[in-house]
Length: 499
Ligand SMILES: [Zn+2]
Ligand SMILES: [Zn+2]
Image (cartoon, rainbow, N blue to C red; front, side, top):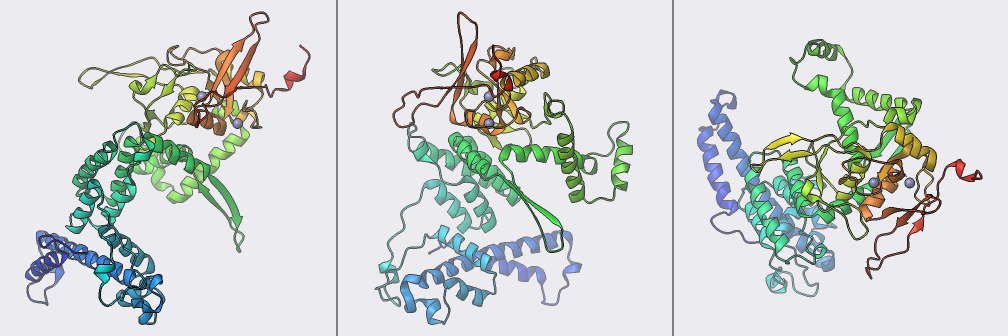
């Protein structure tokens, strides 16, 4: 790896070191006696020095790894020093933890992708000759690497942006110009580089993910489904008899639980002088000796208890604790060839801005309704329309009595775990609903239906007036052909009664 002379870490190191020794004056100076500005300047110079040193450590560690490749056998650098791996050798010299060495090598590899060393080549000379030139990287990535090499980004900032953005998924969008996404990635990198100076590393990573999700709506659904599939809750008892639990949330349920816990913690965090009884509540919160973890635990257990004790329709029926999702109405299309409304773009959580796949937004529109907000041409919000709420509590009871549980053919979820899917055209009908257009589906089946483009249609017998519901699979992904629908059968015990 070769650094350009102007931005070489060695040059920056010398400069910063010179400033530091000037600030410190004679070696015996006491940091406690420095003026504020001097103190902050010293800290900034020391941080610059560290960034430059980190780069040198990264570059050197990467080179040690490369020269210690397993393929080289006993000829490898680490192996000649009596160690098994390059990482172990770097650890021995630097005193760094293994994870830090791995991270340094990752950063070094980003700056100069490691080329394998041919095992037969003599190592002492000809390393360069044996090294094929790395493929030229995309402009957006090069820009990011340059910013790291020039010290504009720390390694942590670099990795936050790199991991948050990922690679532009060009292969997912064959209809787009192949340069379109890499260019969009380039614009996102410029914005993030600007923001890097003022944002905490965690926020930077989050913003990089927000940018990626905006630009890759298909990936949003794939990533959502991956995390949804990974959802889990397990409990165990340790040797002392204490019960433990470990939860992996899917995005949506995670946001819901966050909202719940935030609400419980708000009196401890929020502004403390608002509202007539706010003072009392704040004092109550101050005298509450529970830790935040204990308060969160108590909140979660209380919600579970309430849910277990209450009539499910009563507890969760028509008013669910809220996570508000924002979606642009221009993303809503009238319907596909099968007549159902679809969303063409992702939405985002009001809190935190995390992207929500179109399918999940559709499922929420079905079950929880919407509030339209109108904008004037200057982009100012003009007006709030009438709330579009879907099935009422009474309608849900009627649908539940008719269908008896999740209507997905192979699913046995009871009605208490169901959401209410709206067949179609909920938007044009402005939320007016008829029980004939509602189908109970458990959360899992409901999300699958919307995320994968399944549809439920209703046919009515002209003579008897009886309704039949059909589950239409998405078109065959290979041939594009329509697949035969499956007839949905009520799960209610009533179906066994003679008509
Ligand atoms: Zn639905
Ligand atoms: Zn189901």
